[in-house]
Every structure is written in structure tokens, then in C-alpha cells.
Length: 344
Image (cartoon, rainbow, N blue to C red):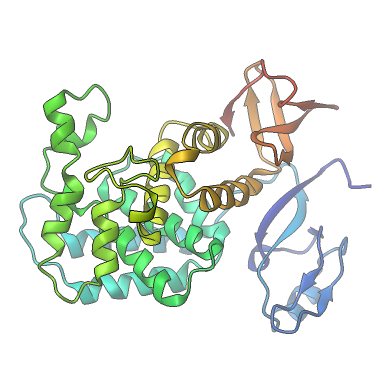
């Protein structure tokens, strides 16, 4: 039986430290052979031995007192550095600078190679609740999330590059818009809403002059606000008219926008319950199922005022997990009057 002081989390093997307990076998990706069995205590010797094998993120047990989203300083520094690089490439309001497509391609390549671990991606974009977010930080988050979705959808390397490029450039049409229009996300007048919804067109017009830009990237920039049910803009396209790169970027964009004001469980509920017809269903469900598993072991505040720990994600109700409050377990799917109001 698992120790009550141990929480189950999923992290890259590179983040494992001596004392953690393996909750699944470590398997060599190339050969399929089991390197270390389940329930093993990780030691310094074991960690040294497994470095030479190719492996991915794994489930481990850690002390409940430890923070799940601990992330190396160099990863955060890289995240911030790339945001500054993006700003220098595409410029700010009224600068009128030429976009150097080769620099955007280089940045997309660096991001794809640097952010290999899904854990690092989610750890960085989860900072959205703690930081002011401008077009550049949002575009970086959308790029990282788009790569995550594309990987889970098994996109090939060419499409991964297109996804990263589209993520970096998707909101460039907002650069020259009045800041009050960008910041005012609700209660827009009819005239303001029409103007705001033109930003994908402005982006397409700005980028289409660069012949070296991939046409699929241009399409994705123009249509990242289109939705499968025809409710999107600016062209009101339906599912079969929206390319898969645009579907990826659109989902990533929506997720990052919702997460500005909603916790992860509220976000998953909105996407899976309220917006499921707007996105590629398979892509949306794969994304939601994978993302929410990273929050097993997290502490949350319930609407009852109690502090609880997420112990099990329910496939039929991802946003209403089973949580542990002191010594009792609470099924939030059955106790619909209780909500998760904050993730600690």
C-alpha cells in the first residue's frame, strides 16, 4: 500500500531525485525493455545508470510537502529570453519594422528543441495566473501549448515547425491595435467587436508580403479563431475548411485565454463541457485528458473552505476529481455542490 505521505505526480526523469518512488516501470524507448521496475526507490546509483537510456516523463511518488511545479531557474530564464527575442523580431506598436522570417524560424526551432518535456511547458504556461500577460507572453504560451497538442496528436517534424511558427505569429495583427481595445476583453461595443475581430485579417495582410513564409502557417494565422461549428471569425468557416495547424493554435489560444482568470479545473470544464463542438473533438479530449493528469497530487481549496489534495482524475468528469480532505475521500462528481475554487 502506498505511503500516505506520498503524492503521485508526473515529471521528467531528469527532475527525479534520490528518495522518490517509481510508480511505473522505466522503459527504454528504443528497445522496449524495462530498465527499472515499478515501486523502486530511486537512488543516486540508479539515476546515474539510467541516464544513458532514452526515456520520457514518468509517474513518481514525492513528499506531499514538496511543490509540484518546481522548475529549474534555467528553464524559466529560457522562457523569458525567448519572449524578449520574439518582441525584438516582430516589434511593438508603430515601429514598422520588417519581420525577419529566418529569425522566427530559428526561434521556432530553438523552442521545439529546448522544451522537450511537457512538464516544463505546463510549468511555464501555468505562470499566466501570476504574471501580467501581453501579446508576446501570450504568443509564447500559445506556441508552447500548440507544440504540446501537436506532439500528442503525433504531428510529424515538418508540421511541428509549422505549428511553432503559427503560434509565434498568430496575434501579430494586434500589434497596431489600440491598447484599450486589446485590454478590454468584455463589454465591447458592436463597432469595437467588429474591429477586434479583424486582427487575424490584419495579421494575414502583414505576413502575406513575406513570400518565404509557409502557406499553411499563413492560413493558420488567418483562421486561428475559426471554430468547427461555424461560430468563429473572421470567415465563419466550418470544420472541413479549417486546417489542422489552425485547429491546434486555436485550441492553445483559447486555453491560454481562459487560464488567465480560471483555475485548471474550471478551464477543463469550459473546454470539455461548454466548447466541445467548437474544436476538433479528438484533439480536445486528448489535450484535456493529458493536461489534467499533471495536477494529480496538487493541493486545492474547496468551496467548503477546506484544503484538499487531488488523488484521482475521473475519465468521465475530468474537472471533478476525487480529492482527499484530511483522512476522508470526497468524490466531486457525486458531491456536485462542492467546487474547486483555487489550486494552491
